[in-house]
Length: 281
Image (cartoon, rainbow, N blue to C red; front, top):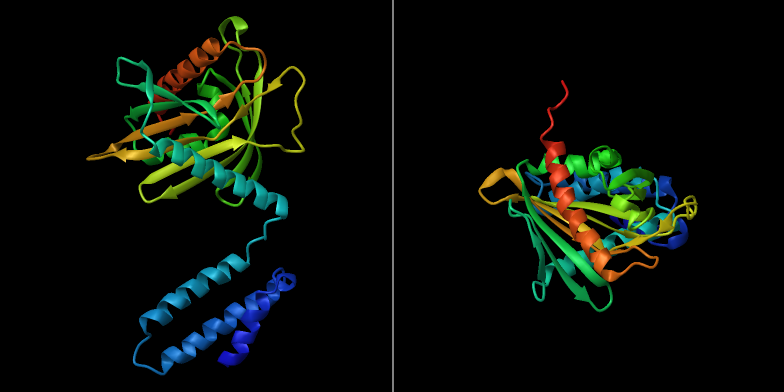
């Protein structure tokens, strides 16, 4: 049985057979049956059989999933790239300069990177557990325009798997219309590892959302938000927001820097207000 199973599994590795779902399912079933037969020969299943069976079970469930297209895979890779680049920027603690410190301790720092430009980093503590903050920023993403005056609209254009989405965001007009109407098309990737959540993104192109009349198509990224519970206080969440935006157009850098740092401070204030609202019964 094992030689036949090996040949069947080997056949799956050939590229022209990978999309034959029935064949892959047959291989998973054969592996499971062979492992069960081996387990019956001994008083109890060995550790490696248990581990392989578990992996085989996971494989069987994944075989039922719709395979990603080449375009979908490119978006997934873009989201992963945004996540990795963002974390590398945040891990480097050197050369950050303080832009502003609010009375409640909220802090915005910045640094200039050769290949990215000026990036901003918000550091705040929110008096809500991580799951609540994560739910608002990820699960309720399209409602951000309801509570953040700097955002006019966030719309999910496409979901790819469980971690990646393509979004279209419209920025709200600034006081005095200093910046002018901007919009963004972004790929976003959300990952959760233990008690840490990372929400990363960067600008992308999406055929169904070309440049819109009346808006300047700005670019963002790499950008991310990192959520972690405060040590010793699980009812609080530490939020770090790395912001990198090219607003395009003819704008003085002093105005851009002022607008972006203030945008982060305002975001923290409005997020707290949103999370403090009574939960509907």
